[in-house]
Length: 198
Image (tube, rainbow, N blue to C red):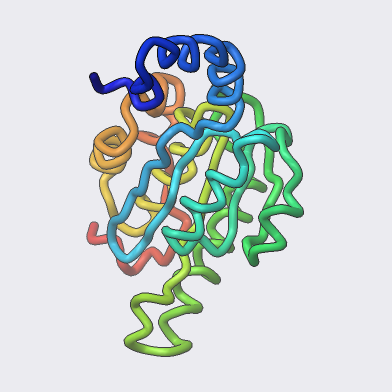
């Protein structure tokens, strides 16, 4: 029992095996790796690995479910971003080398995006909790570059660097390598100085 398509007498087994190769190839192409949602201090991010054109619809479903308003792509392009734009998700291309901490210019862009996404919302309409947009971000595997930027966002919001890494690793195992961790530990907040208690 339990073989979905194998319930016909005798010939059932054939229907299962005959098409297996095709089915496996299809699955590898269109299956998506689970996305990781990180929420802290009024911020919400969805970290994921790089889609391809075949599995992009699956990611779009997840991103729409999480109410992602824009996606930040920090690796080379692996899919057609117009598919995201068609459903109202804007895409920012800010690639930087794998394993490296993000360059200053990208941090500046990233913090600007966070400000407009999360702080712009507050002034707009109060009580619109359900419609609050969040940011999707991905690198190739969703373990290095994307989590580092999310950690920077949390640190800017007053979260201790090591706590920020723990929060992210709790949602996405294996995130952030040693080099990136030491970068985050020495990261200096750029936000308002007056909110840091000396």
